[in-house]
Image 1 (cartoon, rainbow, N blue to C red):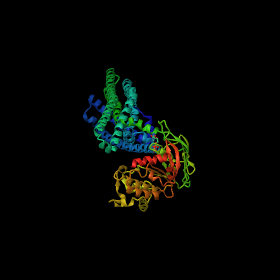
Image 2 (image 1 turned 90 degrees about the vertical axis):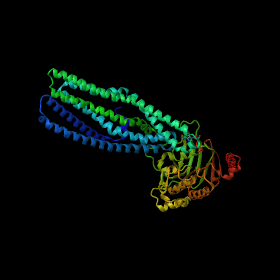
Image 3 (image 1 turned 60 degrees about the horizontal axis):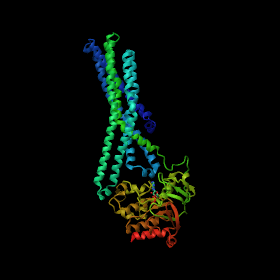
Image 4 (image 1 turned 90 degrees about the horizontal axis):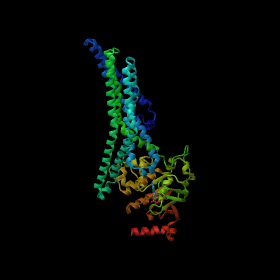
Length: 577
Ligand code: ADP
């Protein structure tokens, strides 16, 4: 590994922090060289019969340099940390932007834990690469050559010997760079797979325990852990050759220089005092490479992670904004239309939605029903532009959704979904996600309309009560009513209710029903429901099967016909019985 182009591109403009790191690196090296040269001078003079008082001034100079160097090393550390913090923040921000651009479709395809490892651990691991390895590399590529150039002026033979070593130490290990990169990738994959497995395990803990599957899961985790251990060792086996060779190269280089220097002294071409200085300096030529391999080991996880980071950045969003796309005009009517829309998920043979046409007038409530897998959620994904249709047009307020900015489209649509997500934080914070500037009075008004105010008010901390991740400390019905309150705060003209009353007890259902009536009043509403009793009141019902529209009409019309809807009603009656 020398310079990883992708990593450089990732960090953006690095000139400032890198230049500071290199400058201090140079000063550290200069201090070492000065110290070494002075030690050489002292040794040379002692060898040639000088007294201690003759070298006292030089010894004091050495002591000053030692202190100075310690200060420089400290400064290098501070600059490295500052640079690393800046770079990590920048990279994480880009990755977050990319993850949100890719949207939920991407996270449905990849493992959440692996994506998390990339964004958290992967970026963390970049630190050593940027803050230590790169500046040191710049020092290595320049410093030793400058010393060698000076040695050349004293004695070309000793200079040439050291030059050979200085060139060989960093270039020879490049032979197995490819192997190293491959093992690095395997290692990172094992690392992120282990993270993904643990996350999955923790999220599914209740299921694991209830299925009594804890032991088999433990074996799986032990297996993944073992895989990580083995891939770490396999990578170390290669990367440690680098360290070994640098040490060997440095040793050999200095030894050869001693040999050549001794011959030159014997020939009378070089005096002993100069030879001492040259030999001490020869050691300094190789020292930066030794440090570089040390830094490499600190940064290698980041380099392996960079493939994952690059892969994440290379992903193309399913439905990106077109260049210069305008916003959906705020005054556009709250109508929705699908015209002959067909969409197939990547890697699937059958389309999830096929030749679907439908239209919702402003203010209308339309229910979409159909068996599980019929394509209802896909209709919502298409409407929100999480995915783009393969053919056909989707319009909101008469504007093709593909031609406007996705953010402006989503601003017009509030979604109350079956699995409304609540983040760890207070209830007020969760509600304000919908409208950050909402006043306390507005929060309470929305919660009242969502039939959840009484519940929140009964909690010891009221709106400041902490809810756990995914709202796990609340019941399904409470979560749903909070989601409705959130949608009320959003006050978007179009509403999507995804299975809004599934898995809720009768009392909750009545409260939710009342909340929903207040929410849907005056809004264009698309209801997606399996529970057919919640769709009776819809203005129209659209029945889809295999992604196609197969029936439409009011509940009474459809129930009277012996068609798909009647079948669904009958099937549900059997289930309910
Ligand atoms: P419904 O909401 O009516 O239950 P969906 O719209 O979720 O149905 O699914 C329609 C079809 O698309 C199903 O065959 C389902 O397996 C498939 N599908 C849904 N989501 C994805 C996805 N992210 N990737 C691939 N196929 C999917």
